[in-house]
Length: 536
DNA sequence: TGCAAGTTGTAGAT
DNA sequence: ATCTACAACTTGCA
Image (tube, rainbow, N blue to C red):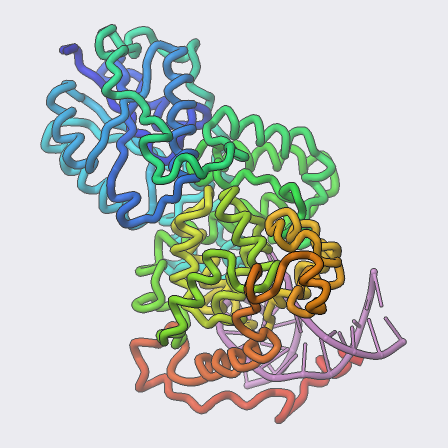
């Protein structure tokens, strides 16, 4: 057991050595002296219990930790992995290790804020200095809130104008590497350096069904993340500058977007690093802009992070004052519909193919997320967005608390997006980018032999053809669980009623005042001349 | 108060 | 490929 004093860097997100200001602060001098660095990661049982983590993401996390550990070992230190609640873990090691200082990256999610407050208080009682740095987002949500007079910006455009008034996001700081790593910070005690009880767990030991995992298509870790960043951004200047999200395909065989989201979620890749690389590329020529550009995608992340950090109960309908209160299904169909959706058994090949890819790869395109989210909620099944959010939370490699809650509210027209009458067709939408149904055939091989004509609607294939192919609809592949053409119109009426009855989201606790008669439609009362002319 | 805009709808006509 | 009707929402800003 070493006696010397030490400094802990606590990894949570921010699983990288590059652009990690809190990690750099851990190797800078403390009262004129360098302290031994003890990088720590805690396997906190809160995750898994309260935040669903599927096997794909458990593996991704382990890959991240292995990458950090391997990098740290090349400079003379290592990762110490603990199991337990952070409060219990730190209570022990603050004393045992004679800790003088702890550094970590600021995290703005509600659980993290509570947890970090607890650890900060604990540190004080042990005379441990606490140093935090914000580097998970381009902007500090608290600063955005302040710049908007204490109100959360509720539209993307508003967010853009508020954040741009704050100024440019900070440039990335230099990566921790051997040359920057003082020898006094290295692990002094060989025994603890080699102690396997602190090793990163094996994927086999954290997953529930290890044998069912496909090989990692998007392996976790900073090394992989930076490789991907170079491949997708640095090496594709022309593609980057012309990038427009809505023009990318939800159902291509290989992803049509960068798939950097899992790396951003865990902080394997720094959003500031990505932002400034994009900025450099854009400065060299004509380029697309937010909301559709790649910088625009980073700004969506910022937008929802700000919402998640500043809106109470952001991941719930009830108690969330910006969320439309909608009477989602609570009947006996709820579990049946939810299970069919989750298990890729809706009978709509486009939907089922997406849900299969989600389960297997842990990633689906943003528009594919739109398609299945609309189908589950206001479009077809009328199941609460919170249920869909939980499934995404479990299965997505990039499952990010704020983004997941924000996007589900968007897609169910509960907040941010209000044109609820724009409904995705589970048949037509996919045809635009994949008329031959190649994507469906890949993910649902049972349907591979169906003629192209029927691939999006196999129930329309003549029985003879189904027999010949050896795939009977209703037996080998489910019949559609709802009739989209009929149900979406019924749901439209329910949405209309949810919008007009009761109260606007902001006034849900103030029902008395907000009982206003529905607004008269402009086109009925006084058609706008400008609008009329525009349409002619 | 009125109007324009809102990351990414569909179906049918031209 | 581009248009229009469909039926029609909220927010921000002048």
